[in-house]
Image (cartoon, rainbow, N blue to C red; front, side, top):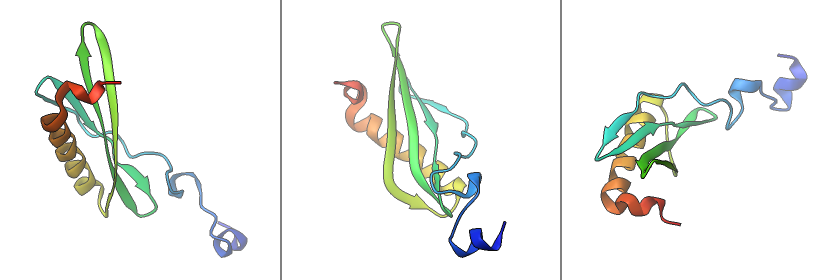
Amino acid sequence: MSWLTRLFGGRTGGEAAGGPAPAAAAGEDYKGFRITPAPIREGGNYRVAARIEKLVDGVALRHDLVRADTMASLEEATAISAAKARQIIDERGERLFAR
């Protein structure tokens, strides 16, 4: 990295805020829904995020959950992402996909 890049705060691809997401965590089935934690890297932290999917009448429905919460570790963000997705499923069920 050049001294100009360091001086002006330039970052390379993987280090950039909102850069490449970490490898997707193993998903889980919960009450007929598929939850896949997908924390978003932001600087040195990870934003709580997950994908919630369900097959309804042959149509794959998807909801992307993104929270304002950030965690310092990928493991913690993954666990919280899954927990928040389960909570939303408990609260909203299939209404999660209502338009």
